[in-house]
Amino acid sequence: MQELQLLELLSRVHRRLVRHLAPLFQAEGLSATEMHVLWKVNRRGALRATELAGDIGIPPSTFTGIFDRLVARGLLERVPDPDDRRSVLVRGTPALQEFIVRLTVAVENELRGLFNALPGGCRERLLADLKLLQDYLEGEEGEGHGR
Image 1 (tube, rainbow, N blue to C red):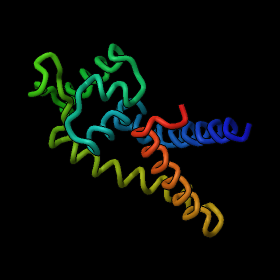
Image 2 (cartoon, rainbow, N blue to C red; image 1 turned 45 degrees about the vertical axis):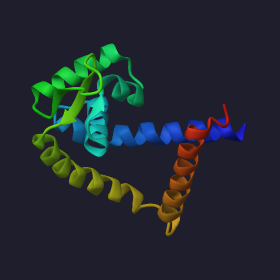
Image 3 (cartoon, helix red, strand yellow; image 1 turned 180 degrees about the vertical axis):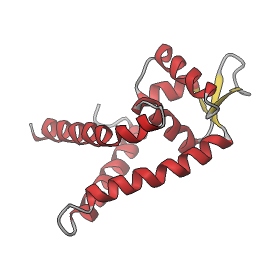
């Protein structure tokens, strides 16, 4: 039962943080999902469109509309996949790099205000524990455990 409680707690924290940051994204004319796409592409580089949609957890048909809007804004571009002629790679543009740098400063300032309000040592423990959990889960994915 505690496992489900933990999952629900992580989900609630994520939703509240996204809601808290939403005004920053909206000021840029972006939804939280669009921002998630941009962040992933910036961090991971060129990805297949289908892989990116699956990674974010949205249907490819929904992703197509998001992708089209971000291409129109000059933040992403379509690139043929050299390994599969039927696939398209999603790649960030130089404008994406500039955008991410600018927005990262605003997001970090906003989050710093939230996290600095936590009692001493809590932020560091939380960061260490979540990193440990992430590392564990990433190791599990390759081994197929827990399914």
